[in-house]
Image 1: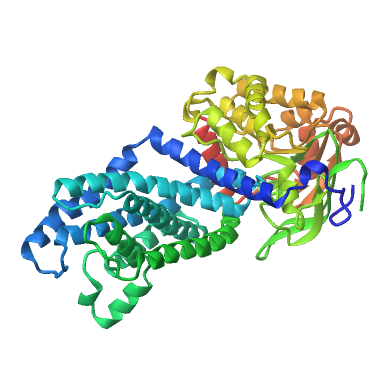
Image 2: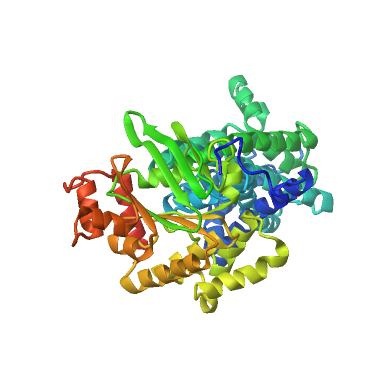
Length: 277
Length: 268
């Protein structure tokens, strides 16, 4: 045996075709996501607790502002305007604290074991992002049911539902991966909690979730245009609500979410191994 | 530097953290099929060494090969050929034993046609068949450690790394883990590198040991040879005390001690 470079030749079983490598990557990604989904199904109390805040936003804030007609929302009632924003908010608030679970896994040694496996770091990160996406879907169901009960005209067109599903999965994946990056940097739950709180409110209020961009001062409108949550809400508004329209274009919304996810996964895959050091 | 029978080989391997040198110029040769023990007090550099050899931590100097692959330049190949049980309890408590094994089988890409059989065999070998479908948080500490061993060996690695595998276990659970490791040794297909504080464990399991102190190897060899070199009635504990100077050890960071206590607490 010798050190690197002159090591033993690769055995037949070691050589992977590109196709097999891609298939393996997706298998490993799905395995991580499936494990997370199993845990969620085994203990769904988290879903119930996460539903409380969106319910309050719709029933209290939404109904009051619908009556006041204080915010011009075009052909949509205020409740119809804000329902996609509340769904986006629910997904954001759940996903942005995903890093806490990652830090917890680090403290338990689970991260060390995952990182000592041959699974590519990007597959591990993407698997975690997929699991966060799975967590977002029940929230969408709860908000659809509640919004329907409150008289919101929901679009049930199959293509629209497919787009909403894709946007929820992508949105949750984007914000959970961002959260994972923060977790890799701060590494402790105490520090993370402070930063998580610091991030959620600006992301939410500097977006088009609960008021249109036109009402914002110029500087805030610029911030909202670079806030990924705005694209997420914009796509949801166009596909979730009857007569809902997209300001940026649904293709742009999906492209921004997909591109941002790819970028964040690349960064997270580089930082994730640092959690085991 | 080359030894045809070595499965782990390091050359001047070092790791520093700022001004602290955790491992200094480590030269280690572990032969194929052996159980090799790395002993040492807290802060001696055992866990840092194991983290470098499992590719979790890049070395700051020196080189090492595991299963024929360079840990820095062929890290993915190294990871394909090793199994690793960290000091912390790493089985996912929210999943069942079988689900933990299924996750490992996917991550290590165990062939689909063999998965079911290998998982069933691993559960039977570790005496966990009857509890395979229970959630792991209901397991005893010894059961969790055996499950972790099953996870680490499911893909039939060339080298198994165990970081303090019996820390916090009661004597019976510890004995059950030892029995499995001795059976693996009898099969002779796997090389095991383990770290431990426990001299009795080192005597019971290890073909050879290295005693680390302040980041370097203070003694190494077969336990019987090390004892004989010190004196007729010397124990391995005497060798250990002699190697580390016999002083009360102040090493080990707050994080290290916290980790050990956390593991012990989880094991109940």
